[in-house]
Image (cartoon, rainbow, N blue to C red):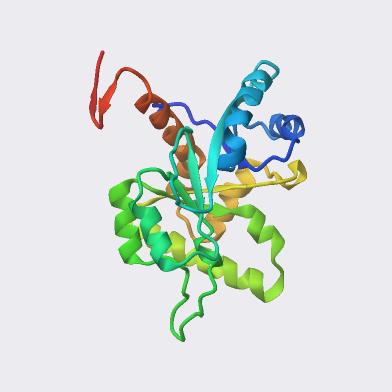
Length: 235
């Protein structure tokens, strides 16, 4: 996998504006761009992205964004579960699932903070499962842009709490714009700087730049004829 060359990727949610996203990604010096689609749009999107790839040097990927786990079959090289406003039982099921790579928006569930600690939608039980199942906890920059005042302060506090838990149990974290409009994209250095402000250590923040690229490469390899099982491949 891409262990020696750091590549920069953003995750976005297009609505027939893929060309505009590519233009902005080029200006922001991204190496890769992953377009996220729901299960209904995914199949048709793949061919369109293959055609777009011929027009740009930026490596384009297609990912699956999941809101429900009913009969999910992951045929993409990256799958993202949106955990916002989901039940604890469903979120636990997602962490156990092999069909999900990234989990985002844990902080958005309608949870009441306790007197002495922030209720961030994530705890040491889920964190241990995430470590065992090799999940990546992803922070959604678009949600930070959406909320204002006290709601933004609460969201940032919850993200800080989840960064702290992930750091303690050595669970991978990343951040992406999840932009629906190209104007919402941000330079990757700004996103990494935000992680550091939110108490991520510099080493983890730098790793967050490439961890999604590594996951995509890993999933691509698993679909190749050389792959047998984890740690075993045919030469």
